Length: 316
Image (cartoon, rainbow, N blue to C red):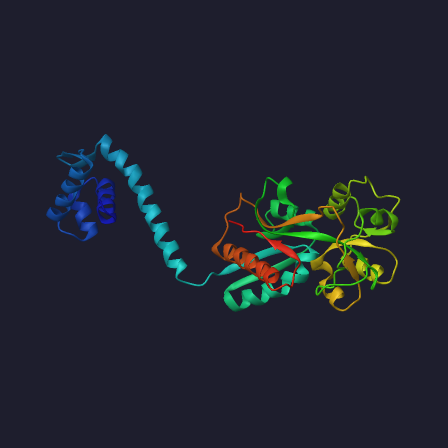
């Protein structure tokens, strides 16, 4: 049974006449009759009853008719997808990035996409993780980089890395530094409570992680300022107005220039997962899949090259 047999069978059914179907198909009537006989032999059932007016489809014929339409549609889609795979992806893809991820991934992703996928119009939206999650759910983003997606079960997410928060202070505050500008000795967790902190607001995912992992309850007494601005937080910390807890991606350039200092906190797991997420209720285009894979590759390259203090996770 092949595609031609199925198409010719459906034409006979529409015409209720082998002669008329042969005329429409542009083939000889005896040849079409022989095709029908071979098809009936293959399926082991009579597909048409011959009448004085032409042919009438049997119950078996109607059953095959239902399957034939689905088979031909599936074959057509398969052909289109295979043909599309031979060409570059195209279309529009919108990806959301939190501020810290945007610092390390934004420009490299845009540059790589322009080079590797010139027919893809990549749009980048920056925002808080909570805002990006909501935008994904509402269908306004194709993809988003998100942190700790375990609670967002309505999203489809592949974890690509795990990064750790650092205790961040003004320049020269934590002694000797390694090649990344991070103190060679970790600080005691008690030091965090003794310093005036500049942290995001209580609704921010980073604040929830800090309070939960340090297990010291709400930090109201230690918090000097609540800021949902990464830029202002770094400026104030560099000026000696307080301390903060931030991932390496957020401060890597300031550490390299000696504008901030940073240290690990001893005995505390302040890590969080980094994932590429999408809304599973939306069909994902080939272009979006390619951008997702490209983003994961770039993040892993940053880790391998020592440009980002994080642990790579195989998304498969």
